[in-house]
Amino acid sequence: MSNERYPQNLTVSLQDFEASGWKEAIAQATREGYSAMWQALSAAARSAIEQGRVEHGKVLWLLADACSMMLSPSNPIEPFKPLAVFHDRRSVIPDDLLDTDITFFAEIVDAVDENWLKARLSDLLWLKSKPRNTSFALKAIDAYRCFPLNTDTWVHGGRECWPRAISLARMLKGGAGDRLQEIDASIVTAFNAATRGDGFLGLWLADLLKSNGLGRAHRADVARKLETLAHEFDGEGDLHRAREYFSAAAEWHRAIPDEAKAAEMTVAVAEGWVKEAVARTASESPSHMVAASFYENAIQTYRTVPRAERSTHRVDERIAELRAHLNDSGERALGEMGLIQTPGVDITQLVENARKSVTGKSAQLALLAFANLHRGANAEELRNNALERMRQHPLQSLFAATVMSRDGRVIAKRPAMSLGEKLMANDEIAIRAEMIRDYGILVSIVVQGDIWPALEVLLLEHRLREVDFIALARNSPIVPKDRAGLFGKALFAGYERDFVIALHLLIPQIEHLVRVHLKQAGAKTTNIDKDGIQNENGMSTLLELPEAVQVFGKDLAFELNSLFCDAFGPNLRNELAHGLLDEDGCNSPFVIYAWWLVLRLTFNTWWNSANPAARQQEVNDEQAPTAEPVEEQGEP
Image (tube, rainbow, N blue to C red; front, side, top):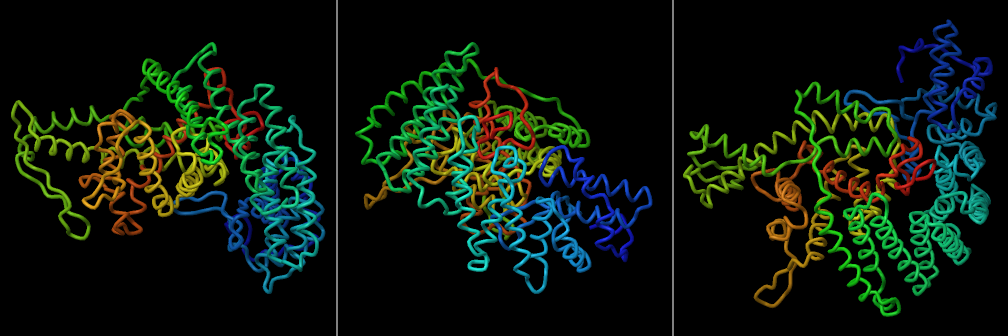
């Protein structure tokens, strides 16, 4: 916390708190939740300081700082994170609170009759008091579970607060009394009361139960209720909500366990994708590109049906039918493709443009702008520029070059360029080395001028969660259905700027994605050794297959190969696989760009499928993207 806001040795008391006008300040918040309270309290604090009410100003600043922290209930050790992090500073975390601040919070907590503030102060006191005082944890639990389980409260903070209450109750074990059982009962009651008019609320509450191991005695009832709501949404043509509810019903039926019913729900999910594909091609602005992505999702969903249940639902025959529809839509989509380019600018203007492109937008539209800050590499353009430069300035190209690793090993050799009229095999190697060199320069500019400045704005303006990225991956047609969780975790790690974790999660999943899509295109992705053992080919071999360009396009295939596999580039896949990347290497511009490229692919394929021309309305920053990133207007 900054001591420039008030004198460092200034002491405040309960009387200062009562006279500070904190209730009036909170009443000015435009909505419920900690973000709005932080804004209202900090504005009141600045006003009090300007008026010379320094004690009141400090009280309000302390309360604002407490409300500014982001709650991360999945981390019981460090449940609070800073609101904003910059390269040289960050906002407040619990460790910034002084002993005198903790003492002040303990003095006023019982006088606080506003549940949001009481829960936050009690939680911080439980976390920072020495020794730990169980009464503070109990106060926090009781305040957290006072928040109503409705849509508005959920999207403005309830989705973090209720899990935190559960975590605290589990931490205290017997010391929490019957609180965990009461929380369980409250959530089940709210779930049972949820209706179609509540949108995704029933799904959120079911997930709250499932992710915390609650509602075990009501599994069958929860599964049936989810199925009923799914059919209701399906009946009124709300295919997205129907699909998500069918998917959740499948998970709950599987937990009972009732595999037959779970398979039935999975088939319903797949057929929901088919309905969307048909509707998209029959709309006023038909898009076969979008329809193809829907058919692909349907096929991938059908593949998750257990073998024992496949004959009942004619799964193999249905996949063959859908593959024919997919091929037809794919061929028709070729005429719909276009390219959007932006003019080149110097890096100063680039940074400013990147920040402006994501500033003040809803989470969905900010992510859309972020994912399209750069159009990606143009392989043909890189090749033409490299070849022209090598011919105009031939001296350097006349000599062979050696590429060495950081530890001195020779990892690649670039042959000399013949510069004849007809290009030879060695010339192509030299051209490719030059292309990758230029690509490395481009990546560095894009990261420093576009990605990093825009990411700082995203982190400041939006509180996205891991579950948001998992949902994004789950709904993106390019991500294999059984890998959505790993993709989502990797994307969230990069969003939090933990590129060490992001890289370690992403690389094997990217290789799996490449293999899956090549297999689906009919490519042979395995080899048989002399003993007759069939082995999967690595990513380098996969990207050399002729089908790679057909499936991913020339530009994306070049980027994947240059980033992950080629020794002339960062060679991230092989460097990581062999343990050659240190921590600095995991935070290089190439790694940041690789994370952004995967986010771009995941988000854009989802966006293209989820946002037809008729649905371009902005969504609310606080409500999107959430656990189901397709919806708008107060839904995920």
